[in-house]
Image (cartoon, rainbow, N blue to C red; front, side, top):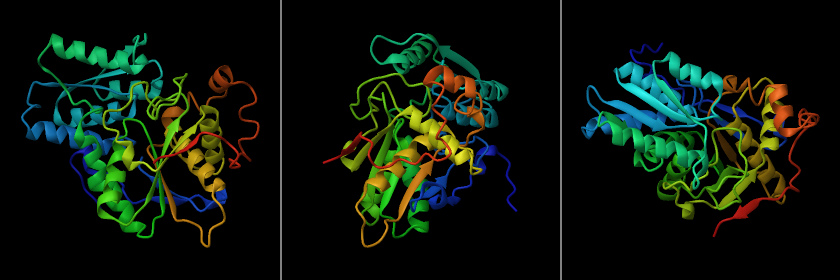
Length: 337
């Protein structure tokens, strides 16, 4: 029986779901939402805070500030509350209301950016706001998840080794691309220390991360309006872009089998299922794994709310959710050199 004294000490790192009965493909899902922060972002948050403390940047009286669409903000709120720091999360209007309320319950301030920057959209505006706060008061400490190497090193040290330990014959790994911390940490690990694993990055349509055409994105988590500085796409073998409509259908498909996941997970599972459906029949099925960054409770007012879905995506989007499985005929798969 584990006994802990701080919330960040607990993180279930070894839970996997076999999705074959749902997706009709041999696909395992690594669940990263079973901790007190509710997402994979706890790993990056803890690593960045600990590094800032070691480097003497984060001391008594300092106030953490970070731009986040939600999950990292919750993780930093939890850690800040545990350690006695103040925390200001700069987010935008796409951040789910339960996520904002959770951060405030943990004692954090939430600043909501409503107007996009001329270059960089809402993300650019959030970063501008963070910079302005830091310039106004030297108590603010910006961890900067977009450039901080501890973001990807957290997954190099924890997430990827756990996968390698449980799946020594892994053939293909599907990872969602947001800041690309998880993507880069796992891709670097398997390139440098393990047998070759085919790395497939899953992004959302409208994200500029892999040079897709900028477009409307309403589901927080994956995708960016500014290319992530952490990204080195030489470590990525393929990129798949998933529409938000397919994200929502996949989330509901999983929920109807009892698994309530967040939008990022729906995007990753949708892209992974499409990739597997497009592969020629091999002598054996590849061992395939996708990473689920969070769970679905914080999305009850958005991707699981009928009115929100109908207002943004139309009335028929969920008609075939129960039977929806990508056929392999969709576009938007890119092979990397």
